[in-house]
Length: 539
Image (tube, rainbow, N blue to C red; front, side):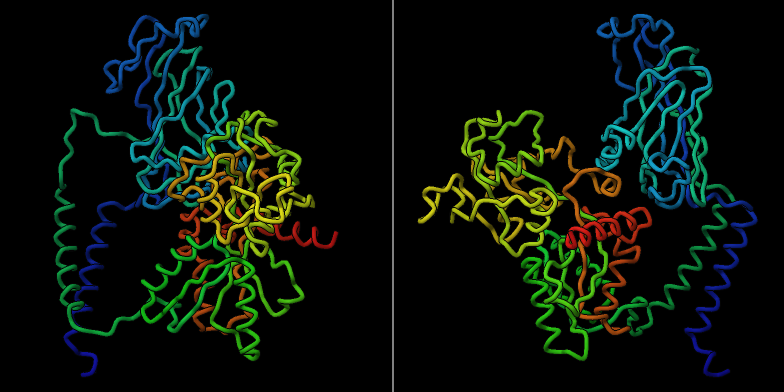
């Protein structure tokens, strides 16, 4: 008993009692806590349109005169405009898997009681969350759709307090007739809410809030006095100490670096080294380390763009899903192709040397110069499997990517190889007429990307991170993490693998531009990609 009666334990007990008291008061004052996940909506403007008035005047919006749209509004004398705000006003972020609609592609439905939808536009959010707009861009079944009195919205992920607005043109009914948003959230609700008007001035604190704030302040002061006593730092559960080396794909290096920084910050005593020199080099390094320690699993993880290609040399390597990644063809901005795209058949002809000048493809007058990854690159393997599909590319004919090297003066086209994704992008950005390929997120984060253009492939644009799983875009593949056999439980290797597949690591991978395979919505897509590659090898 005397051992328990320390100052630290007594203070901790008092702080706990104060916390319980504050909780009890909170429950008494608000017996029903709001859902932790909630989408709220409200109509911010509902006004006649096309009757000689200014649309939005007096609504706090920029005034737009409709005279220029008189021809468009013929036969729409009863047109009205609604500005609808939809926001996450709950306590948690909302991801696409939180929506419970039976429609796999859409999460919310906007319904008008007496009016017919004639057009809809999405406004840029004030917080400049540009990734939100990407979910409305794709056309077809995955994008925003409307018909009759309904608008179907994609499954939009919303961080807490994020929002977007819909500007909707309607006919067939008066202003202020019914508008509602329907849909379901797992563990939450979709409900109308109310904004504070300009004339309202809400009180800073209610009487009950003051009491609760006072109790919580006392709780914090007591808890702080406990925390100031010196003590050993305890790392989060699941952390391990030691050294670990990450090797492999340069296309995944940005995500690997972000994962390394996050793990070392949360887990003192861990030391992670990154040596991302290419898929094949990483797999070779892992296999060599394993042969030196045949009775254990070395502290090394190799990232690979796609499944390992020479399985007989890596029989002891074990793969794990990490993410689904999109790749893209890029050309120097001097090339101006119709619709800014190529078919896979046309790409095959170019890499086979059948087209040597962009004028043959209505893309300008520059000579075509091909920039590829080196032969052991995982990105190159994906390009050859997904795009070339058996077509043999011309040999490596150039050192500087601009002129033919000695011995290849009669080659039909300049074709050079580079050791990393950034080197490919640097050459494409620098050389007029250059054509290359890259992991999509590496291109987006490249410093001089304005000197290049992303190409559509088979008339399909590269998908956003959220749309990779459902997209028909052909140039995508799974990123794998390889270990030598199964790492020992409790090792740093095992802990880091677990970290990558848990919520924290998944969010880091997603922020780096890859779709985490462990997400429920992506797992089946990753599994299908793996099965497809295995089937290709047996054919």
